[in-house]
Image (cartoon, rainbow, N blue to C red; front, side, top):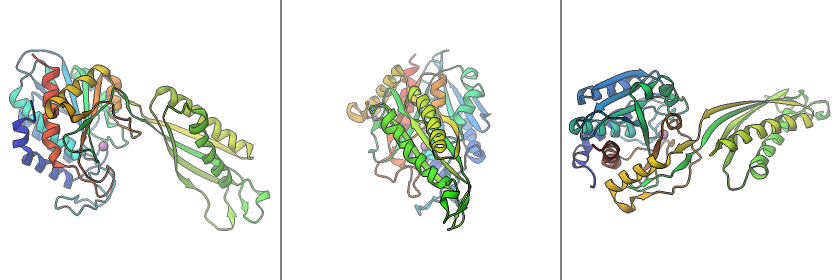
Length: 387
Ligand code: NI
């Protein structure tokens, strides 16, 4: 069965919702207008339950099938935008300076709304579909908050599925893999303490900038010398702040960055080695350093059985050759990982065509992908909840 006829017929209407959301981007948990838009639509479609305020501003719409009682599945979209000033010049570009839907969450929300409407109208399944709209995907942990708020238990969700667009991949193509698909994301802050003084008399100081530079170099040694070459580890120092004057060695320096891993073991080992390296290098050079290591998002792990169902649904919509089933893992992170820790499920990528990459001020979600995403959601639900 190819694209749903209704998904193609309603594409212009769903694209209009998407563009309306695009022009009014909201950040993190402050997605009040977006959430209101979503809740009103779900109510109008005739969802059996529309519950707002889950994980602060998250929403779940519950749709019961017409073939009797059964387990529920969760289909999840994200609603938040990014603190970026849009540079697309599009007629429906962001009306809010410094905020932009630069990751396509406007498209994800619109497609899941389109699927919800179709599922409300047809209800050709046994059990229930919970359509999940989460806030704060971009670093705020909105997915974790919805899980901690008891969403899975409240709606008796047995399996969960996520979707994200992928620029550079043709519209109509999917990619997925079983196992680790996206990285764990951690944040590190390093405070180096030395002794300030005259820049012309470095021997009377303990230079925290010199120590910081050695720490940066040594951290790459953890990737190159301590980690199995076939495992993945990224350590990126992205901030180095110290000093105010040309002729003064400052007393301290602050470095910060991110650590990405694809397995629990590598993540554990990385934290241990980073701490030892930071403290040891600073000590060897006469100073001191402390590490603040914050675990943000876990590894996004696709479960085997659910990945196979997602593959079958994608093939059913777009054909045998439409999906890359052994996609390379991505070192970006996904808040959906928290939902996959709570319930088995799978995250899939759908092609966004030849557009700028996500988080770029020139990026735009591709409305041509709407019928593909809507059809995928509907087919996935009908396959999982076959009467
Ligand atoms: Ni995103």
